[in-house]
Length: 170
Image (cartoon, rainbow, N blue to C red; front, side, top):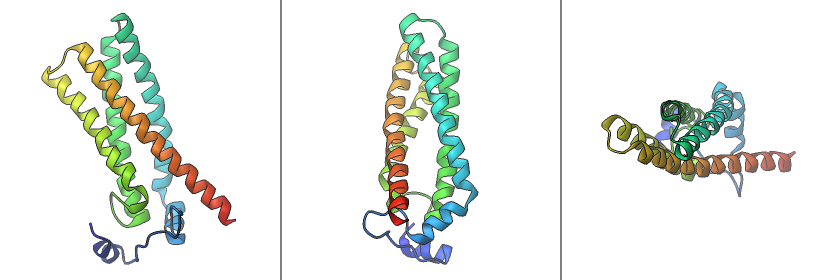
């Protein structure tokens, strides 16, 4: 969606924040007012907890050969939580920035999110198509998890930048 069509669709002008600011004043107000900020605030740590449990189960399987079913179920759950946070995050971006994805302030985080989703969905495809061995599936899951960690770090960095900006503006 172009900026012009986003402006028309939301009846509010979209503008790039000044300097290194992550949000304009209007975007910050919308961010603080929407329930989707709370939803993201709940889902992000939940996803991280699911990731940690799943990572432990995957590593356990790779080290011992035990617990394949538990590791597999945990990866499927992690993928479901990832897709949920992606959909709700797109709604959050629409409310805050006037477009579902690729808002200038979160462009690269969204781009990398698609790589993370692709790896997780590739795992699901390989699982249900028997395209990889159990060990191959676990290594694919580890690749998806490595990408997730990078993407999570991108978002944590943005959260930190937003907090520093808010403190500087007080």
